[in-house]
Image (cartoon, rainbow, N blue to C red; front, top):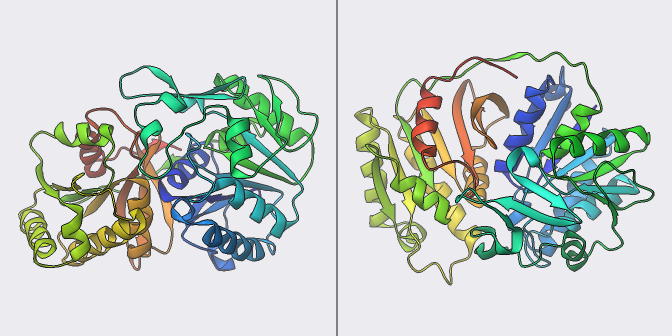
Amino acid sequence: MSYVFVADDFTGASDTLATLSRGGLAVRLFRDLPPPEALAGLDAWGIATPARSLDREGIAALAARLGAGLADHAPAFLHVKVCSTFDSSPRIGNIALLAQGLADALRIRDLALIGGQPSLGRHCIFGTLFARGQDGRTHRIDRHPVMSVHPVTPMEEADLLRHFAALGLHGLELVPRGGRGRGFPRLYDALVPEDVAAAGRDLLGAGRRLLVMGASSVAEAWLAAHPGRVQQSVPGLPARGPVLVFAGSRSSLTTAQIAGADGVARLPLPPAHVLADGPEAERARAWARERLTRGQDCILYLTADGTGGIEPARLAKASAGLVARILGDGPAAGLVVAGGDTSSAIVTALAPDWLDHAGDICAGVPILAARLGARSMPLALKGGQMGEADFFARALARLKAPEVSPA
């Protein structure tokens, strides 16, 4: 298999799926190790995991299990897909531990990182990570208005060499823009797209089995090292009916996007009501069912009330149960989810056979075709820091009338 990726959540995994699809590859995303027959005709495939929300023991077990299953495929190039902001902590969602566990299981000795994704406003220079914010400015990641105050994995260190050392990955060689690495493990600076392409040529020119960590810039680097692929059209999957939006993200950007969704019915949900799964949650379900039955799009969103002592993974799982029951009522023809942990929990609860690329809403947020038994449903997964102020209006319009676009 030319390209295999393992992602630490579903939002990022969907972006890599779309990047490879736009690059002309036949690619598909799974929730776990797929059966061999599901891989027929594919150039690339990936697995989305809930690693971002796991503790050290959970990540170690996940890496060992997936590594054992991937060994039969003997991937020459394994992409460990992580958030473009690299937010992680030694205790929760440790991306270095995930990568090292997979490398050990697959006996891959050479590990590299691509430190930025300029196409998404993420830049790494002199090993320091910067990211564009909703204010249009580019911030050092430890001063970013969203990522520096992330509720689970706040980025307190912009120097990625120091950040990864704290996660347990030591001795990274910093490869400057357009430079060539001398040893492994290594970290590539990436300020502009040409730096990503140069990193891809350097990595693939080595002719080694590789594990490469990073955002979808890793897919961009691999594609740059394999030019000449013919792009194919992506068939749209219009939602022939109303769309449900569930926002588990409580980032300042998502909050502003919800406030800007003029004309769309909105219902705030205190997290305690979702966790209790009692009368208040049932009223929210009835509220959504009534509007969807009338053919009306609607947004359910978690508020920030009393979230200090709530375990994010537990809240995401409870949110997924509520969304699954609403979709089980039948009237929703499409789904948009905001929030990384929430997206992972909801897709896990819906249990699609696989996910295909079916169009794009904005940078970093594709439209997915979720295969649910005999039917496919359009789905979009948005990280808390993705999209512009009009994201939800744009997402609803695109899900209902996606254009047939080149991959």
